[in-house]
Length: 335
Image 1: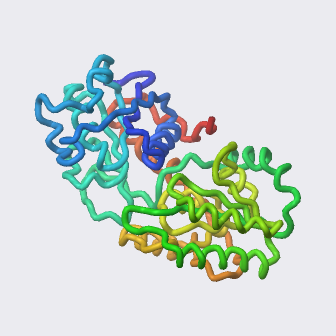
Image 2: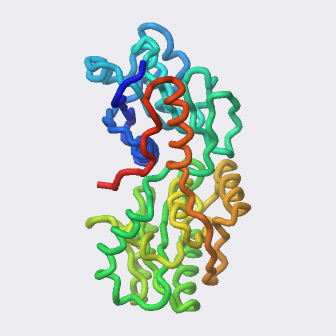
Image 3: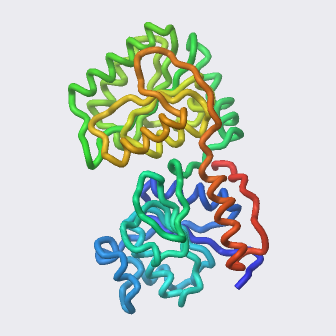
């Protein structure tokens, strides 16, 4: 049924890396959306396809969600939320159009549309392939954030390099040897190339790694953000001449590539096969290079998967008569 302003829900357990992709897609689609935080039901997490069976709850906080009318469009991300998407489709009697980001590792027929990275193997007529994570980053956002941060970094000299540090993953822990190599490499890079480093960390960055990074501030041309104030991450990306990002996060790498600036990959621990394939594909596209201790400069068209994929989805929504016409695909400003 065609509606003037389709309602949209984002179901998430609050995991930032997943939720931000859902928000990015909703914004790129021009949809006003509601975030609904759920506590995934254990059966839906382990056997998501069973959520199609009558009586299986949408989530542990099921009643809080089902007391409302079902949305026209639902966006979810990650296997842990796949069951909730299937359950809501069932509860809506098939009226909710479900869009799921990332490979749910089950039959694609359980969803109306899947957004799956090129490095995953699932096949289906309802699959759109993505070259990277969906991000909210646009040039206007980068410019705005750069203006906010510029007065705080005007003492820095030379080329300015944004350094985005991740940390431990389910595949690998960052050991002392890796930390020492990272710290030594970054300090030497700053000295050899007469450039400044603007470093940010994430929630996965361990305390030993944070402490080691803070020790770099003995060099007056290195600043480090770990927590306690407004995160300058986007400002650093906006003002940077180039970017160094650790290899442990597809999201961070995708966001770096959204800038069109040189992106250098620093290996941090053991990469999963999925991340190796992802990084390799970006290298072949000319977006990233491996960190080699030298300042490297090149240009490319920014990776903007949110907008590209939103245009494809809007065509499908129009075909399904869920919207009157393709809505705008310019993402809204970050709050």
